[in-house]
Length: 404
Image 1: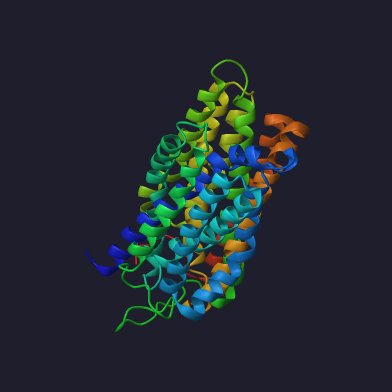
Image 2: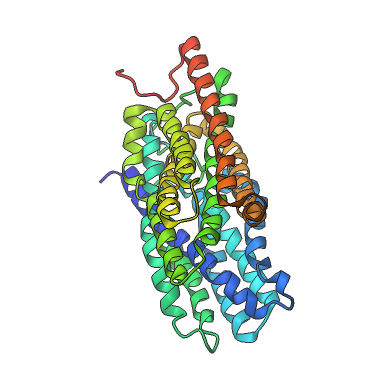
């Protein structure tokens, strides 16, 4: 096994631990918030601030990696996870809502650091293999989808008597394991994106003349996909939450959606190599539109569940494809700046989707909200067509599959 392969697999493990924390926080934040908040409107404040911290810290954390390197900053992030778990545990045991807020703020800082695992996997990797590296790291989410519900339910099986205090210790455990793993990950050089010793830094696959629009396109693909996914995932719980057995139905639907989000990562990288980034991103937007069309007839599970599954696959193609394409549009020297801007944009759009879901559901309904995803997909497809034509006219290699 090469050093690059070891780096990808170990980062995938860290990704699984990070996403376990993220999914667990979604599962318990509102419940614990409702118990500790002084007023009902503040119930989701801790989780909302966690989202805000991710947006605010994305760019500074990326630039810090440029100054210190990946490893020291990732180790720092793991410490925030450990602190978040202990703080949350003590907050619940002591009945402190302020402590709960601090716990989620600390977790948000950890999540900000962890979002860069996928880019760390591409450092020093040849352009045609970066998509596979991003995809394999993202595939760690499959393990998280299995671990998080089990750990959260086990820790919170007896809800009475502050049982969810132990759920927060999941953050500390994940942070401690991540810290130890990060000490062993090869290729996390002091220079951040500098290649291994003896290797020349790979040049950006997209020349400067096309790189600006290419980076914008990559950000739109990943950000728009995340925004629509968050919007419809939250709304699906409202659409399905009626009638007997609805709680179980919602749980199964979300689990299927999460699996659909991350399971394709095992072959998305190879699709990027064989079909090219443009075709995979186009397929992502087409699946996004198809997901909307399938769900439009109504809120019955026969419409909502297949729509959620297709939505998960569409998210994967757009998020993994967009992230991989972004790495082709900048040089190693500009990586931290561009990646920081990218994650700020993607996190911001993801927050927009999550925060507007309830209002749009009550204003437009499930079917009406699905209609909104069609112009989002249409704009993306139009930009991809423009990119392909401009690249072909310029004779540029743009990460598309080729015989050379």
